[in-house]
Image 1 (cartoon, rainbow, N blue to C red):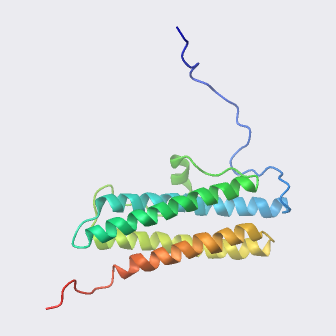
Image 2 (cartoon, helix red, strand yellow; image 1 turned 90 degrees about the vertical axis):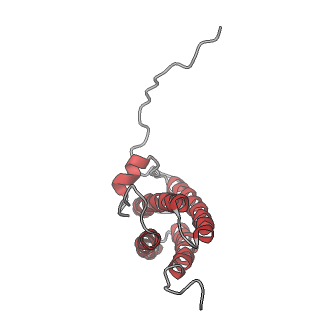
Image 3 (cartoon, one colour; image 1 turned 45 degrees about the vertical axis):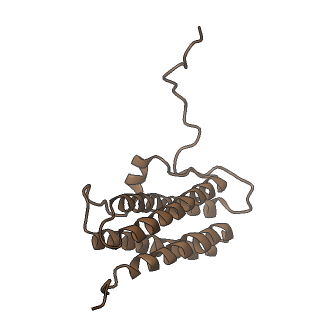
Length: 184
């Protein structure tokens, strides 16, 4: 008869959050440390935006339920891809990516939604506000990391985070335009 796993296991921390170890990526320690801090902020907010998209996807209601249900799920998948890209960039620079949801909640600036179901325009507005906060931060971080010579972080922020966020914000914003579904 086999033995089960030896639990619990306790391990020592080999790298503290907020630190950056030396990696041969051709960037100064200062640039990598700065980028990791900014990326972890965008990463935390992006994880929350992903969660908002999934929540609103599940709770969608009304005449445009089907269309919004599909687009919100598509957007959630795209945000999840950004989460992975951002976390991998932090790791590539020698940092520690924020991953635990409780730690994410400490770092995010995206406001917490009510636990219940909001009206559809409020859900969409909440998504747009989160997008704008992330986009504002990403634009600033992209400019500052470019000034530090970190082309990889700049490229990630511009070509993935900003372009994806702008396109998604456009799709969501167009659902808040007040036009009748049927003309008499």
